[in-house]
Image 1 (tube, one colour):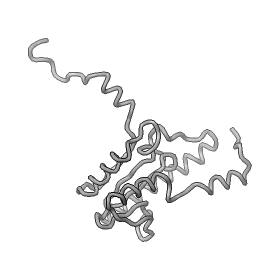
Image 2 (tube, rainbow, N blue to C red):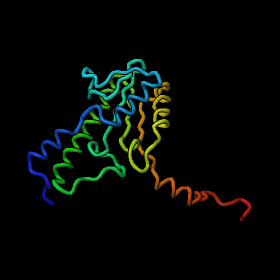
Image 3 (cartoon, rainbow, N blue to C red):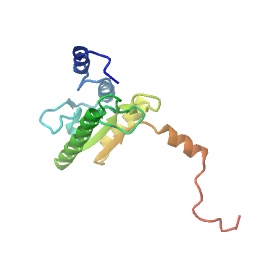
Image 4 (cartoon, one colour):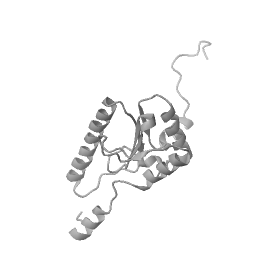
Length: 173
């Protein structure tokens, strides 16, 4: 399917896509700030310029867009046009995420990743719950945290079908 925009319009559209200060980032930053957390944004001296840096907790938070980072969720769909280009671009982003994560861990940083789908879409998490998870992680000692959308299908399936017994009932029933 050919592009519906001419090259100049497509270029303007792509240039308008933000790399920082996105709505999900602003929601999280605002919520953390209201709870008294102070942080720096996009510190250039750290590998990967994390979205939020909480030096006091030696922790960084990345807020990833599901499309740009190829998240396995209901918000991600590979475009039908120029599929090879997009697959390569998103694959390179995923590889860079791994390299950045390894580097930050080796430097002693703790890493939280909040996916866009956790804040948007049919299976999003309430902001209050998301902030509770983040602040609990900050106060804890775990190295990694990943916050993604609720898996609606799994929740429904598990609530509809009780788990199968792994051992036979000793009474013979």
